[in-house]
Each structure stands twice: as structure tokens, then as C-alpha cells.
Length: 376
View 1 (cartoon, helix red, strand yellow):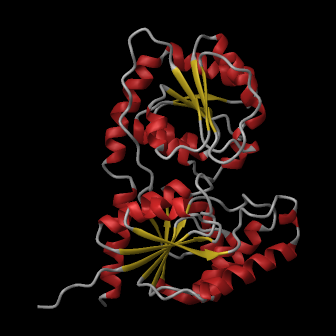
View 2: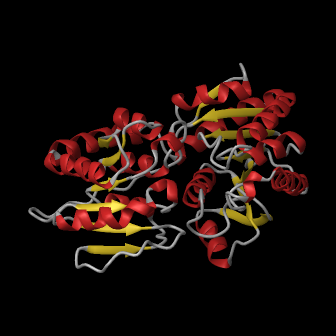
């Protein structure tokens, strides 16, 4: 009787270089899900990884390796206006991919412009899966052009490449790049945590969480915190990899940097405040919103962006229409006033959401497709 060999899966994420950087928590969950499904998992990350990160991935059954020296988030925004910087990124990433061993499956969780180029120029993996999360113009004006060129080059690989968007609304923005290529829908690889039980009569706990980048409303945070505290609300401000803004101490204010169990932090909040620039998230997903939905926590957020559409359909939210302190705080006031109804809706929808989203379901879908195609 022949024993089926474990599938060899490589998760490719050059941006994973230290805890809290873009995609770190997502990749930990994805790698762990593949390992639980019986795969032999290698995560190819940035060469700045440390022993603590290696141990973290080992705990979930994955081998973390320092395979990349560059990634799309590394240069600052001014540098990304120089096409020569892009050319160097493409050349370096392509050369490093070419040196990697050939897995059964290579999975790029969040396809970036230089990654599309590297896949096309140095395809690695009997099957290559690419996740599409809307990060088309996140790195400046050259991003769409370079992504588009990579997408056209990838067409030569045919069915060796499987494209998957993390929501059906993310398919259309990629059509100009991939034409009529099939884009399937991937389960969203974020899990939640059980919502904390709030003590009767205690102030609501508001979380401003994640990486406090400029597009995430960083400049507004001090004024928002002041307004929230004046409303006798508890506030936790957390930034995964950037310094926290200057905010005066207060008994109801908690400051945190990177946390290992981010879903647990989200679930400890009664509301998540996401004061982001809507136009930069028109076709871009949000891990914060996904974790909040999965945890049954209502979100206060801008109304005209993709995360708002997803949260309105699958979670619970209070919306603001202008990214100014007074309008954001009005949306918070509305959420507080209607909190019982919002919370009940968020919790009921979280149960449904978790039945068809999450890293385990994503890993299962990729492995199912890979087994069918590699057996042919």
C-alpha cells in the first residue's frame, strides 16, 4: 500500500522581517493552517528574521527561512518614485526566488508588484497560488504599471498559476491586469477570538489598533483619544511596528506595541475605531476589519471604502463620511448610543462569518485544488 507523501508548501512573503510588520500575523496563521492540514511548510521571509520569529513559526509547525533581502514595503515613498529603485527590487527578488528549492505549491498571500514580476521571470512551484487583496497602488504611481507588466508575463504560465481574491469585490479591480483569466474567491485568512464579556455598567472600551501609519489616521489619534476620554470611555491605542503618537497619560488610557495574540486584543474591545483614509482603501482590504468581524466587535470606520462594504454586509459598523475628528467622534457617539443593537448584530454575524472564512478554510481550499491538479 502506497503512503501519500506530505505536500511540500512554500509560503512566500518577503515583507515578514520582524514581528508586527505587514502580513506577519496573517502568515503565521496561514503557515499553521497548512501544517495542521498535514503539509510540510516552509515560509520564505526577509533575512532580518530573528530567533524569536523562527521559534514562533516552529510552534505552528512551519520552518521559517531568511530568503529575501528586499520587499515592496522597504523603500520609503519618495524612493518609490524612482523607477531605478523598482528595477533593483525586481532584479533582486527574481534572483532570490530563482535560488529557492521547488515546492509542490508556492503561495504568495498578498501579491505585490515585484512579486508578480518574480513569479513571471523565475516561476517556482509546480503550482503557484497568488492572493489578491487590493494592494495595487499602495506603493506609488509605478505600482499599477509594474504589477500589470508582471501580470501579462504571468499569463505565459497558464494554469500553473491560480489567482484568488479575498472577496468577490476585489475581482473587478484586477480585471485590467489579468483580463479574462479565472480569479476564484479565497477564504479570508484571518481568525477572530471569543468576545470578552463586559462588566455591567463599565465604560465601553475603544480600540485604535494595528500599524498607525499616516493613511490609518495617525495624525488624528491624539485628538480622538482626548475626545474619547472626555466621553468617559476606556481607550487602548496599539501600534504593531510604528511608534505611538504623543498622548498624555490618563487612567482610562492603555498603550501597547506589538502583541502576539492580536485577535484576543480585538475581542477585548467593545468597539474598534478605524480612522483611515477612505480613498486609499477603495479597492484594498483591511485585516483589522476582518478580525473585528470574526470576533463579533463593531467597527467605527469611513463609509466610502471596500472594508466598509464588507463590514456592512458581514459585520456591524457605525460610519463617518469625513475624516475629521468631530465627524469621527459623532460616529462613535452613534455607536455608543446604539451599542446593544450593534453588538448583538456583530456577534450573530461573526458566527456565520467564521463558518466560511479563516486560515484553515483557505489552506483546505488550496490543498484541495493542488491535489486535484497535481494528480492529473
